[in-house]
Amino acid sequence: MSHPQSPGLGAATLAIHSQQQKDAFGSPHMPIYDTTTFTYPDTAALLEVTEGHRRAPLYSRYGHNPTLYALEETLAALEEAEVAWAFSSGMAAISTLFLSHGQSGIVCLGEVYGGTLSLLEQQLPELGINTHFLLEGHDPDALENLLESGVRLVYLETPTNPTLRLVDIAAVAEQAHRHGALVAVDSTFATPINQQPLTLGADIVLHSATKYLGGHSDLTAGVVMGSAKLLDPMWPWRQNLGCALSPQIASLLSRSLRTLSLRVQRHNTSALAIAETMSGHPAIARVLYPGLASHPGHHLACRQMRGFGGMLTLEFVGGRNAAAKVADQLTLFAIAPSLGGAESLVTQPCTTSHADLSAEERKRRGITDGMLRLSVGLEDVEDLLNDLHHAITTLEES
Ligand code: PLP
Image 1: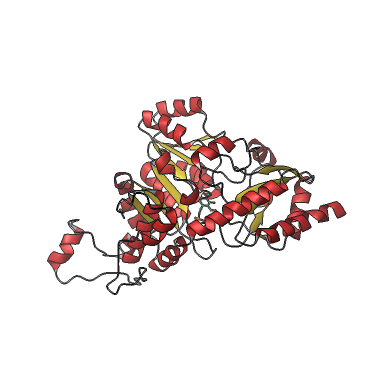
Image 2: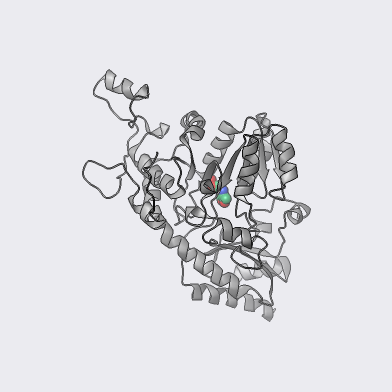
């Protein structure tokens, strides 16, 4: 859905006031239209809609549903996008993007989520789509060669998982646009509160809304945003793959967005406090967090992000066993492979998200066995710090 220009309004206000769709009874939020289809008084009225003369709800699988429209208006406002489309998962959004825009080849910059990597490495090549990988992130010479060879979709995540590396969105967009290529950014880790890729020059932004946008570990959803012209080719794919978001989950996600700004501010301040406190701890070799001046991407983070997010990675001096021991001793950080919820979570990449890679491959990607990735939740930060200190003390006892 397109949204009216709202110059000057902040993200917290936009999250609450961007819905133009209203129900007939003045509900302050769009109720759940728990309906498969929408009826029309006569054939002429139906034709007006099916022939595209008037936009109105028709069939929920098509994404034609007022609850979805209302959600999409809010999402578009938050990313300053013309259009947002909601999907049944982050992977549904990402695969629909690749199928509709990837025919001339896709280049993936840096580290990406495992499901995305598997699509790019295995399923898409099986369909004849050429995919390329520049593991170092933005390598201008290598990217130039690929763009010259005709690759037309550049895909990246920033910050990345689990090393929290950054990619310079504006620089990639400038280079890609000289060749007429599109840049799509998975901005899941950042959220629109901390980073707006479209304002930096990207063409398309995606989120796994399962994470921070949902924010409570109770829904699965995805979203793609950009101009109507660029999203149009995705329309038949979303319709015919049948992966539009359900109205029930759209309503839950709309509710979550109303507190997104508050939640993200809290994630930002708590993660920064933990990163600063853990830096220099004798049991910890490195703290990876873009908000630390020691982070190699800190200057870029200051340029392209407004906050540094709730994700950080600790690397333990004692390696794999020490990291596992700390994870096992934590009580407020639960061991689980997701992120972005109210509750704090911890994972050891070498035993979970990156367990399928060889030790050599993990090393190539800068992922060490002693790393623990933290998704810092909304608990009191003093309690989270106490939990970490207590868990780390057990290393000294052994
Ligand atoms: N993108 C990122 C950065 C992710 O971390 C994930 C999942 O963890 C996805 C996409 C896929 O999202 P979903 O699980 O909603 O399909």
